[in-house]
Length: 278
Length: 278
Image 1 (cartoon, rainbow over the protein chains, first blue to last red):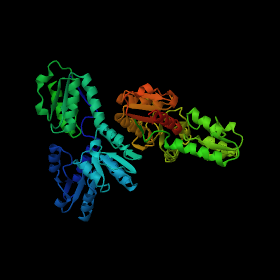
Image 2 (cartoon, each protein chain N blue to C red; image 1 turned 90 degrees about the vertical axis):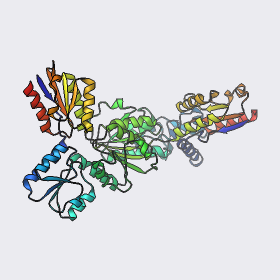
Image 3 (cartoon, chains in turn blue, yellow; image 1 turned 120 degrees about the horizontal axis):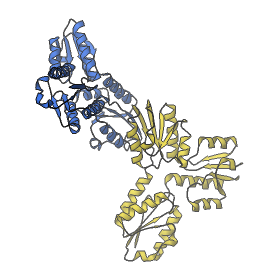
Image 4 (spheres, rainbow over the protein chains, first blue to last red; image 1 turned 180 degrees about the horizontal axis):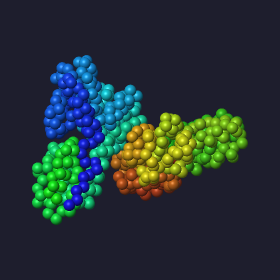
């Protein structure tokens, strides 16, 4: 039996970089090490960091000394300030794509644009981005939320890095009627769409697809949906233990992919388990 | 019988201004007066100017001395240069909205944007706009024409002033995937859409609609189409002589509107003819 793992499977660049940064801190630092919020929304990863004495804290208030790691989603400007005032050692693991988007929110604000951010209000990345704008920055997911927007001289538009492209397009089209000048920075990271495309391609070539990742992970569930429409023998699992080898009857080619928040070791365990069986 | 004339009927602001400018020239100047191309695409107006000794010429080459009037559509940069070199007196009647679009093509070019102009390649306004850009400026009416566009650092987008908004939106959406920075100036003049909306509203309130304007005028024909779907008793005429009073049986309210290139005096003759009959 042949096993194919999607090239884009596993952590995205920004998540990988943040976890590497945290691990580096664990080997270098002697004081307490904390992440501002869980480093990613994956309890296994958070638990693993705890074994390296890196603990997630909700806010700078909960940290009295030592190192604070800014997670890949970034942080609010006020959180940096609070950490500096406390004399904490700040290690910034903000994803470079998110950092770029933060800089662009600030740039558009400085240039006098009325800034609109396309994304989810409650997402930590968005909360960070908003802090780089002016008080009147708007966060929306669709033009419906902009019906009350008065006409502006110039509008600047930036997107949460993981927002679907159609949402950005819809807001931009709407804003063409709200200002004569529109400056858009397409800050959408294409890792998610590349992962979806690659997983779909893989599903076409195999007899069985295994999607690995948290059932609470929206991007992992979406991968499973996409693959299932192509290869009905698609199974979504969280860990290797869930594999049922009755799925493999008559299978000669297995495809494996995973979400952006799925650690490599979890995927590797799945590959190993299937290899040992085959 | 009541007669209602749409508020937006007749020449648009830019056309009116250009013709007023030409008439002013006729009273002030003593030398020859020429327009670069017909001042608008309406033979009656061109003929009227000829009676004031203002003649349309195809190019600066055909004018040896005197005054050259730049029509509302504007002109190419090279035409200004040629006129200056010949020592002609230049009277610029370019529509201020077109002039603004020319300035913005130049600004985007100076700022290093790859410029895309949404409009009709062969339209005189567009030919003028293009001359303010770099050699690689692209003129397109739909994203289909941009399939070969390589990825750019930043794209600047400007529209012909009379282009339908949907065309601009489609090109902007497409370009969001071709550059991470997009600057759009919505240079579409809303006179056309306002005229269409107002005429449609008027059609709802009357028993008969008369649309006045050249049968070769696309915007006039479009007005007739819109009104006919609302009020089936809609008639498109060029001049008052075409009115057939059998249309008026049982009519108590008549609506009148006209295209952007229809002179007021033609509309006034229509109003007068109907008033005299009523």
